[in-house]
Amino acid sequence: MPDRFDRQKRVKVIGEPGQRRIEQATVIIAGVGALGTYAAAQLIRAGVAGLILVDPDVVTLTNLQRQALFTEADVGELKVTAAKRHLLEINHSAHIQVVPESIDRSFFEDHPATLVLDCLDNYTARDTINQAALAGHFDYIFASCAGTFGSVMPVSPTHHACLNCLYPNLAELKQTDCDLIGVNTALVPLVSALQVSLALHYLVDRASVQFDRLHTFDNWTMTQQTFRVQKADQCAMCHRLTWPVPTDTSDTLQVLCGTQTYQVTHALLPSLPLIEQHLENQKVPYKRFKTFLSFNWDGYTISLFKNQKLLLYGVSDLEAATRLYQTIKTAFNQEVIQP
Image 1: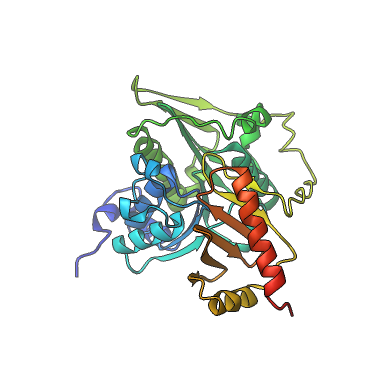
Image 2: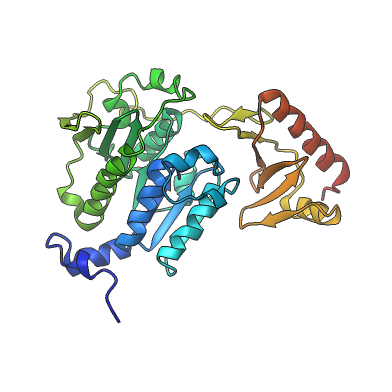
């Protein structure tokens, strides 16, 4: 039988030992959008057997311009489940775990991995990864795309520069998270290739990775630069000894930037099995996944998780999301018998 990875093993710096390390790795891909879909496909083709895909959003028509794994048939489906299906068509034996939620610091404690790829599109979530990496002493690879300009950097914040060292104005960048910035279609695979190249280098030979290098590329002017980034002596993140407890956002609707998806946590909802039974009794169409239920309500798709988080998809504005949430909350609390 032909060896699927024969051509990669022939690469001198990888060889048989390096390929074994690649195949033994588990990689978290945070953000299954433009960069995340390219990265996931390349890693599966390279032999990474374990992927954890994290993204709360659904596929929309505007995604297809730059998000390589998806097709028109996937519109309306959760990105992570659509991506998993396509990735298993590349390698049916890969182990792919899907997590259709937004990232928080505790996520990395519950999902150990060899490496994390930051394929996100906002700096609030990027800062969350950076904080988790500092607190948990793990490495990740940062990548971003905007317009025609892309950046990639391996980050090992315990001993090298963290994201806040790279961007001392990180707090200001977080204020622009919901600004819609265009992305040149051809930029994405270029930046993703650099990110995956660093990922494979890391998996094969971490000791020779240069964690103090930021690589930038402009695919319009065809210029590429590399900068040395040193750990900042006055970095507020690197020298923080304790981390603040996240603000309680229970019962507060929040929009996911650049989408028509709202999320909310409601601690008083009945348990997932009781809600599932209620949906079944009321003949409401639903799908059961390992950690959540997906169902239709008043023409909208809803995901409800074990941790009491709800995601409301395709809602036009906050007023409509609030009305929808209130109908769900009222129905479940009045009609479902709680234990």
